Length: 194
Ligand SMILES: [Zn+2]
Image 1 (cartoon, rainbow, N blue to C red):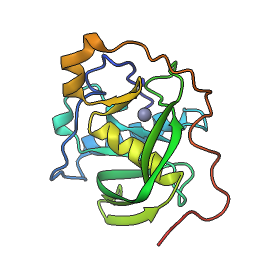
Image 2: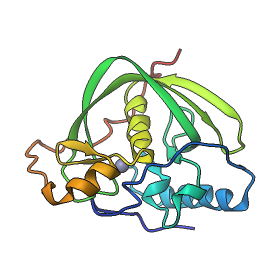
Image 3: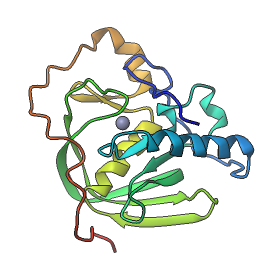
Image 4: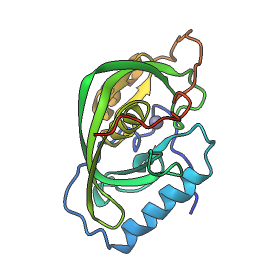
């Protein structure tokens, strides 16, 4: 089912960290939300490169594993990542990023690890891992941030806890940088894989 995207800095689900843990991946509820992620992602413009569960979920996140969908070299239509954990390597690169949950914001320059190794379960519950370089590594780090309740807003990341404490200090960003779009055009050559 296509769900509405959670939007705005005051949306508590966007700012909630989802803890990894033991989940029954055959549970009908989890399967429904995997389909909801896919269905909703399929309605987004082609320059949307990922969608995290807390961008569409509207209930108690403690009953849901951390999961997101993102375009990858393997699947341009998007691949499901459950219970992801990752490690960044290879220094840092900066790029302009936008977010479907903040559609009116100017893309924000964000520094991230150049390469990223991710361990996760696929939607069949099978353990997977791979290492990627830009732009895929940046896409995945953006989605992992969502699962930790971190959103791009203003010139900083705010966690849910931090945001709730300091929401009154947050103002609309005055980001005058040109919107270069995110991600960069999808690479035609093979990305950095091990
Ligand atoms: Zn986002």
